Image 1 (cartoon, helix red, strand yellow):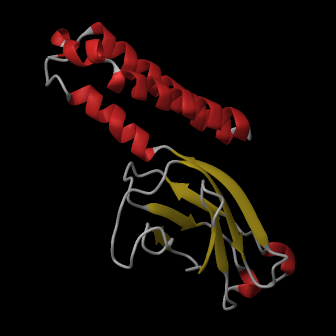
Image 2 (cartoon, rainbow, N blue to C red; image 1 turned 45 degrees about the vertical axis):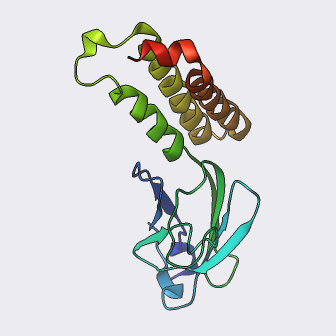
Length: 178
């Protein structure tokens, strides 16, 4: 096959699972299909981890294989901006994408949604407002990242996080839940 047929690409699958980062290979490897490939994942902390890449499959990462916790010990991955680079052989064939991970914060917002049970009518207006505002900012964060606005994405994420943190600290708001 011709060199121009090579197209290195991947997608980060949004699973809602804060314990896993799943990256799907969508590359056309052409004549380098049997050559090794690697992935470099730069965590929100700035630490970069390199792994062998499984071509034509979903590659699953967690706190253990990203060296954030002991082997076979799994915790929530940190939210924030991840820089992901997939490199074929030779290194001239590569693709880099930034991804904003929001699973941990979304789980906190999900918890707020269900705190008062199934009766939507009894949920306080403050809880509704907090959930809607935080969701809106998370959606804005992901939208900004898709549009290449990394700084705005991080800003919007932090705003959503602040909304939830302020609500969790507010004694009056906590009292309104019950």
